Length: 182
Image (tube, rainbow, N blue to C red; front, side):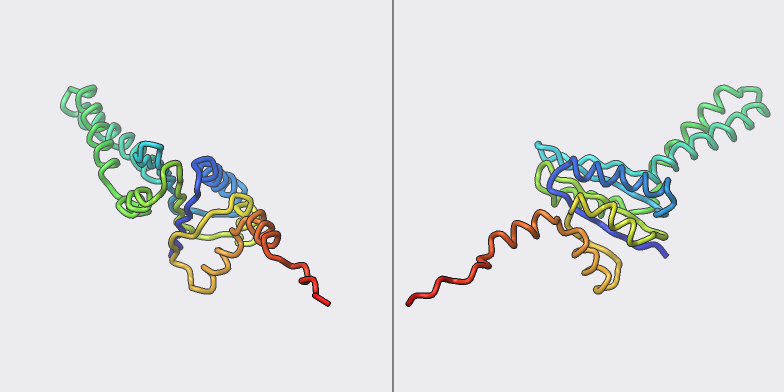
């Protein structure tokens, strides 16, 4: 069973960097994802979504549709027409199918972002947790929602806290002993 993790970022750059880092982690076999998505809210408030699984599914569906259409076309002496028709039907089927992370959830989270913000969504099958957290830690982020246990979610929140934030919080605290009046 996959684990859903949705992280939000105050700026688009961090969201895009994390989305790219997920691909690197998969390539290094430290992370296995069922699906991943990136939602970015531009300055005008429009949400743009990039998904990995649905794009792959659309291409595969169009390819198989074209293959079967061409095969049927050879039987009925119109291979080009039936091949294009099959590819078009496969493309449409791939685009309309909602697999992986729910599209409505992605849009809802994207709409809740401040302009310029981003959200990264992951359906994690398996991960080398310590190495993945170390790779994502520099980008910070806020845990929006997970299907992790409360304890694991708290650990994730702690791991993603910016070191700069912790450092500035320590600086803002008055740790010097108060001068005593004599």
